Image (cartoon, rainbow, N blue to C red; front, side):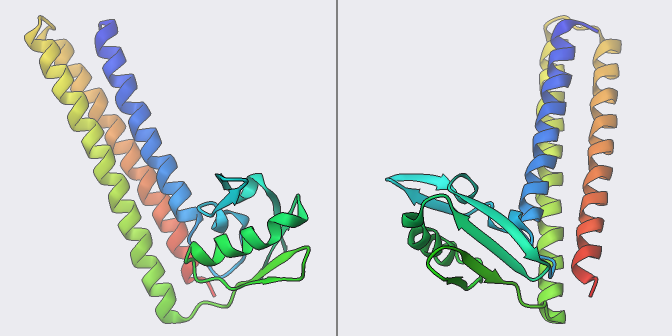
Length: 187
């Protein structure tokens, strides 16, 4: 295969990888009944006029399975962090003792678990759509290269390679979604 074809395949694989990474980040913010510092990954704090991820202005830990503890590096950041958590609308109620912010994670109800599972499947489907879009873009580029003189055999091999990668990434999504679903439904 030519360098151009390999470049197209590599670009498609890179985009598919990004879709998997995005899925993992999105699913990491969904809580499965136990505290996890990643649940706050989407929270941005106003740090001296700049929107900054909470993990860059505080230590985040889980002293026990039902609690997230946030210890700001500067005492003046306690209030802005607390406000940011509330404004992020994640459904958590932060409690602040002046130095540390604690969030108690309540147990999930059966109804809430089912809603979260639907959300997991929706995120999985979004990742699949992104992967299929990457495959389509790559195949379109291969067809354009074929019009510019790429042999039919090389084009077919490239499309087969892209399809195999699409299938592998699809299986990876299935595994990630299934693991998260089991985690959520586990009591």
